[in-house]
Length: 194
Image (cartoon, rainbow, N blue to C red; front, side, top):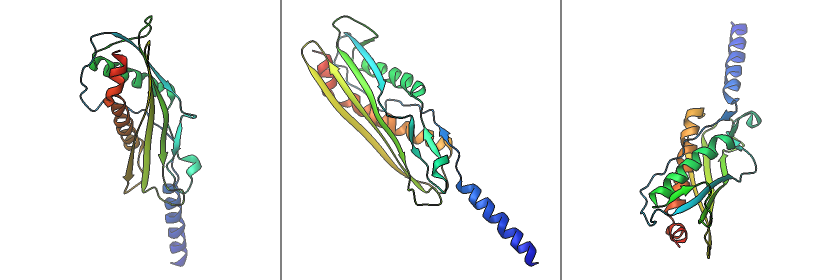
């Protein structure tokens, strides 16, 4: 009986430890504008560019017993085209015509400055995370320059370690919120319109 109890305890401990080890997650977020925009342009061309300015594709780790194996990342070649498409859509909604290259056209460069996923490092189980995103927008026309910084964050609690689908949605929501803040800044439309 004692031997069975010892084996059962070893098995339970093994399962508990296995539950604490998380695999890396490569996320593919889908950022979307979440608000209507007021048209201020008259169809003028605007050069729109999105840049990944993050130092690394790694957002952070999900923590747990083995944080070194629980990295969360978003590849630049996955996120930049999606952000580019949303930025061009936003520029259209503002009343301009996005273009890849136009002589003397105003330019809008949006840089994904950082994207972070942080969870407590001293916890055995993943119970919460803070996700944040920050963009920088640089607008230039013939006579004026404007730079703005925009961020969003989300504190999320979990009953159990979040899977890839959950984390993808959370990162998508934060990116969407931060990107929408970029285009809600009236000074961007005004500067492009000069």
